[in-house]
Image 1 (cartoon, rainbow, N blue to C red):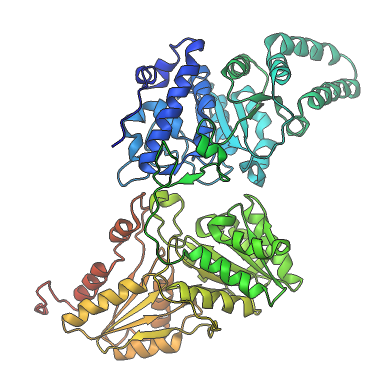
Image 2: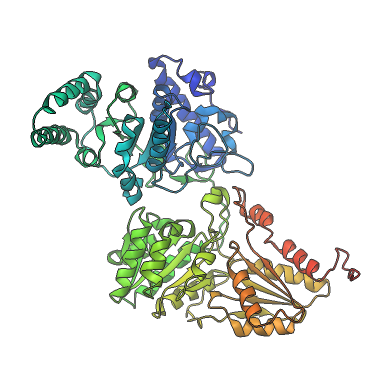
Amino acid sequence: MSQTPETPLLDQVPTPDELRQLKPEQLRQLSDELRTEMIDAVSVSGGHLGSGLGVVELTVALHYVFNTPDDRLIWDVGHQCYPHKILTGRRDRIRTLRQGGGLSGFTKRTESEYDPFGAAHSSTSISAALGFAVANKLNDKPGRGIAVIGDGAMSAGMAYEAMNNAAQAGNRLVVILNDNDMSIAPPVGGLSAYLARMVSSSEYLGLRSLASKAVKKMSRRVHEGIRKAEEYTRGMVTGGTLFEELGFYYVGPIDGHNLDHLIPVLENVRDTSEGPVLIHVVTKKGKGYKFAEESADKYHGVPKFNVITGEKKKGAAGPPAYQNVFGDTLAKLAETDDRICAITAAMPSGTGVDRFAQAHPTRSFDVGIAEQHGVTFAAGLAAQGMRPFAAIYSTFLQRAYDQVVHDVAIQNLPVRFAIDRAGLVGADGCTHAGSFDITYLATLPNMVVMAAADEAELANMTYTAAEYDDGPIALRYPRGSGTGVPIPETLEKLEIGKGRIVREGTKVAILSLGARLEEAKKAADTLEAKGLSTTVADLRFAKPLDEDLITKLMRTHEVVVTVEEGAIGGLGAHVLTYASDEGLTDTGLKVRTLRLPDTFIDHETPEKQYDEAGLNAPQIVDCVLKALKHNSANVEEARA
């Protein structure tokens, strides 16, 4: 069992109040100890590693210079916040990250006053920081909004929408552009550090202000021309012209791992009346841990691992992951259909599109963190006769709902939505759960919604979607590995809106949609043992419903239970609406709908999450028995 690393200076700094008592020359040691502590903690819990390693010095510097939590520090996405959590009173719980009852892997308002804004989706930080800054301005209160946003998050339009409105915050808004991947910066070294200090210094800004007052007495055209000339001259030297055009005072680029460069610039920005300010900081993802630095993904997300060897702990070999089944199937289909193409929004490996891209690089498109654009791009491809698959996590497709409605469904364009991470997702918690896609898609005219019960069904549904040209179609599938069923060599084109009977009974009918099918079958086994003959149907489609199958089962069974990995308003609601319209419930039929509860379920193991949601076999059995008024001893209760 590994020992907790020795961190004598970090031990003296439980919160930023103690951090700000240190001398500047002590911050290097503190950063080194903080990095060591973080590596050790993530080796125990698993989680996001590389992104946090890249901002260790930046985290120390920000809490050292600014008056957090009164100055509101917002980490975009939040997956790089582990050093921040260690420094803000949560070190004693850092090894509980992403575990049931432990710390969230992202920032969370209910967890700490130092987490002013919950984040797990990208590119929201500048908008939120602007809100904090303007609120303080309107209420004449001190306190800045400080957004730390990565270069990847800057690929989303929302970041620019926020910057375009930032001028009204003035010097109360500070944006830190954490540039660790895009190489948008010129070489970082002594000269750029000097320039950054110079253009953020009170002397430079004082002279700039004095000059501005002088030229204001000239004509408006001359004044504006001189102002632009100063901006562009500074922009050519520093590279920040774009941000100047958006209304920011640009400072940088500076080395995000050099505290001697970071601290003076942040202090200058803190003390200036200029603003809003954007500080361009260049960092290295995975910094300080060689295995992360050398890894292709910089150890972005890791399971538990050995700190000394870097070896990641792997689970037992098992069935393929659903996203890989999708990616491999689509790549195979594209060999004989040059109309098939794939789109992902910055998640190529997470969606399996990386496998498609290896086989068909010219037909694979990673649009960045831009789901809205990705969906409308797919709509354009479909309108021009292509067969696009927009492979987007359920939780991220929420960001493009207007485009799904307006650009795809209304125009009835055959965009194929491959919806990964459908249902509950374990350690990532409620922010990444695919809880709502059945509801928000099945409500749309023209939309077809499928859900795969296993990997063979996913392969068949991928083929079905590729061949469906009559309008938009979605296939949803869960995170993790399949059930182990063989994938057929020859794929089946499913009949749209038709389910299948998995096992036949006479008294109870369980209508399952998606990956709860195995639990439904286990429940049926238990019910059969209690003498309750049970039918299990895999509906396959949430829309259109298999009305013939539903009608038949409702007319021949005493209890019908729907089971789905989605929120209220999905399959159960559609089945109940149909049953009501057709009068199928007028004869005393008992109908129950099992779905996700009307709450956000925190991070836990998926098994425990589904227990909490009431969607495992024991809860399905309990639902049936209560509907039949049986008690646990299988004795029918007296009827009133």
